[in-house]
Length: 324
Image 1 (tube, one colour):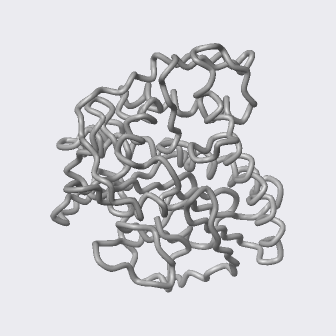
Image 2 (cartoon, one colour):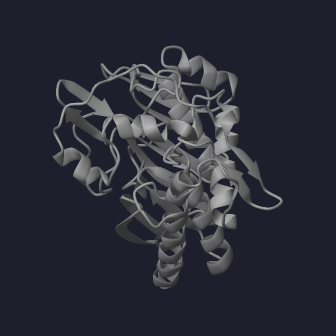
């Protein structure tokens, strides 16, 4: 039996976009230069797409009052990804949830949200809907109805990870792994045996065993793997335990699942499918299976359900490259 030899890798861990960042390269000598490119890329994404920066392009759309606005190619691309995800999930992932999430108290950096214990009133109210937003890619012009607030939180991190991995692998000519808060994508030549990723309830340091919650270590050689869940970004307001996954049909945070992990050709597709599964609730595993997407769903009671094609757990590997 052949013994797999692990290629030397190097990793960097830091924070951006309000979440953890992990970069791994198969050529240690290129880690620093790749990390600089990644930092610049994420700063550009933050300036374009952040819901929490008053100087971001996305927030500026709130002041447009329904007028067409010319936006940067970067924001236009981010909006296009969000609208495509909405169409592919029948509206389960919808970028017009901004006001609904704000009404739950998630209207600033998450660390500040946790410190605020003022009660909120939960009201059933559908979000305006993604079809109300128009985007002309020929001119990069977007029109958002007055009073509609966009939130790209369900798609922007995964899309940013996809763009970063492709950029770094193409520039450096080595294998790279980029993980943004559990949205993980790999590009270039992988290490022998593939990239090992630990799937768990909440993103954490790779050198620490997660607790509590179930976890599994799997391997991928290309594409993306994303975990969407309700365990990491939770807060309490009055009598309500809240999280950031909002059902566009009700405007409320309701789901029977704790986490959903999905593997797909891109991280953006994986994350959109995982978030949609949380919103769709019971029977989401059948929806994912019909799409041919390998997935692992964890119910609130800890029960684990997988769809066909989900990678076999590999606990014997000496250590994961990332935690998703």
